[in-house]
Amino acid sequence: MRRRWLAGITMAALLGLAACGGGGGTPAPSGQASGTGGGGKQQVEVFSWWTGPGEADGLKAMKEIFEKENPNLTFFDAAVAGGSGDKAKALLQSKLQADTPPDTFQGHAGAELLGYIKAGDLEDLTFLYDELKLKDAFPAQLVEQISHEGKIYSVPVNIHRSNILWFNPSVLKEAGVAAAPKTIEEFIAALEKVKAKGKIPLSIGSEWTVTHLMESVLLGSLGTDAYNALFKPGADWGSAAVTKALNDFAKIMSYAGDPQDDWQPAAAQVAEGQAAFNIMGDWAYGYFHNPPEGGLGKKSKTDFDWAPSPGTEGTYMWLSDSFTLPKGAKNRDGAVAWLKVAASKEGQDAFNPKKGSIPARKDADAALYTDYLGDALKDWSSNKLAGSVQHGVAVSQPWLASINESVGLFIGTKDVAALQKGLVDAAAANAQ
Ligand code: GAL
Image 1 (cartoon, rainbow, N blue to C red):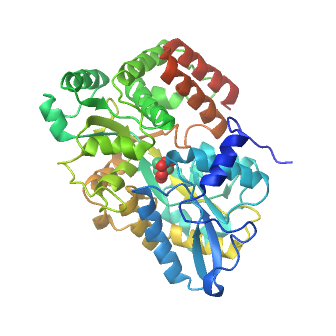
Image 2: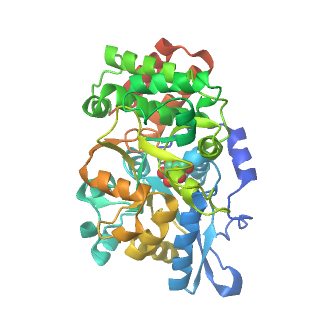
């Protein structure tokens, strides 16, 4: 029996998820997901959480290349709605548990992927890395994050940045805030000025977006080295420095507007001029920038602008979406064909400009990455690195579930001491 973790997932939640289905329309009857699609083509079931505005555009671009290059295969979109994949990952666990995996699924490089590897869910992809010479294509430190005991387990499609402060230039101007705040103190002062003008100082979405905010505040308040040290064995989550960071977080949260359903409506409050600031990953760029239907079609630097989240300039809080080959995939060959497109320069250069991320490959066409994405490429090559908590790099899924639980309680109680105790306990139970 493989080791499983279903922390925090109730049966009701799973049933709800199964009922809400994916973004790709009606799921195939069980047993048929990887079977024959229309016209005798073989389906490849691709599992992700990229259904929403902004998110789905990149996937669609890669799907088009995949179907063009593989005329005998059709892409079956098994995406499950919900930013950051909390709902998708819960459903995925039940599929893995039942040994009915999708043909390929999205998993974050780092601690999250390690969980699937250690549970024995994934095939070793070293054969693909050898065939396509992928070790040379990706940065060595990224390959390290998807490897275990000398084997490589996924294909990274991108690098996202989580520590971005999105802001509305007009709302800042109206409030007398001259420039994007560079420190936590400047940020709090700016939030206060916006509040005095009656606009929403800081927009937030569902619960995970608050953990996302907290990771940026921890990084900005503690500094990069102390933040990174939190995930090493024996780290002190009970320190006075963490107390200070959590007090900063509580203060910043006191300026938050009403929680929106997910990250898109929270980000939209900034682009529409209702709110001044939102701290979100750079998938928000795809959403702001992509033409209507997929995105909001907003004007960069006019409707929205960006800066590293306060206190984090010079550090890239990174995460990487990667695709896997689960053991027992029904259409293994189809999944490998998908992984080849995901690994390719053409696939990455189609996907990333739409997704709001930069390519994981080192040889991508830099000319395609302009505006925010030009800044991102530059910073990725020069900044220090820190791993995202909410998006799978720094902590395992059970650890993240405990952190999310403490943050969820904090949203109601505003009790900083209880939050810190929750984080101390979460680290003690999960750090390795
Ligand atoms: C992250 C994922 C991104 C984006 C975001 C919001 O976890 O890595 O690609 O989808 O969630 O849903």
